[in-house]
Length: 184
Image 1 (cartoon, helix red, strand yellow):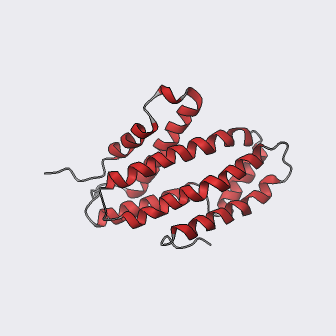
Image 2 (cartoon, rainbow, N blue to C red; image 1 turned 180 degrees about the horizontal axis):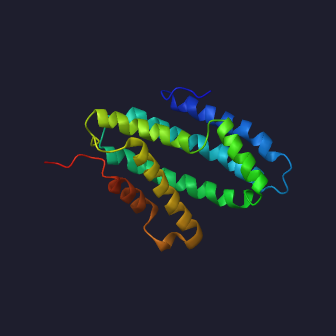
Image 3 (cartoon, rainbow, N blue to C red; image 1 turned 90 degrees about the vertical axis):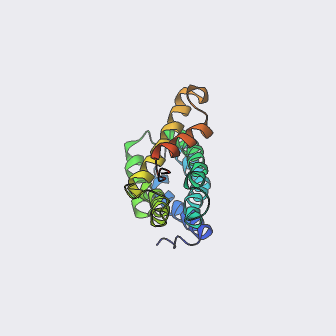
């Protein structure tokens, strides 16, 4: 059972508990320590990442929307870079991958858990007139996360000097979502 979005600290603790629950079926029949390493990293990084996402609800109506989202995008790039590097060696076995997918579903983790708080923030800002009405909050949340994931993926394989810096990329991702009303 997930906690309410009102308490980011409790949400982080709940996320940590769900990652631990998820770890049990994944650790069965493991061949090497890659799954253990990935789960340890996920247990460390995912609660912080979820707290950052859930804290957005407290930013609605404060500051500028892009100024609220750029640090989230930057944190997303960092999170995905950390987690992807450990995920690749952990998921060489199709059986582990299938068990991981099921564990994500069973514990309410995975992409929907990341998308929900971002979309909720965008809905709140839309109601305040700070995000244009034509914007689809859920699609915009997915696009922001996809941009973060893509930058992390490229940096991991090609190197940090192959594209914009993480900070510049975070700003680009948010800017190109075109969320704010255009001044008349």
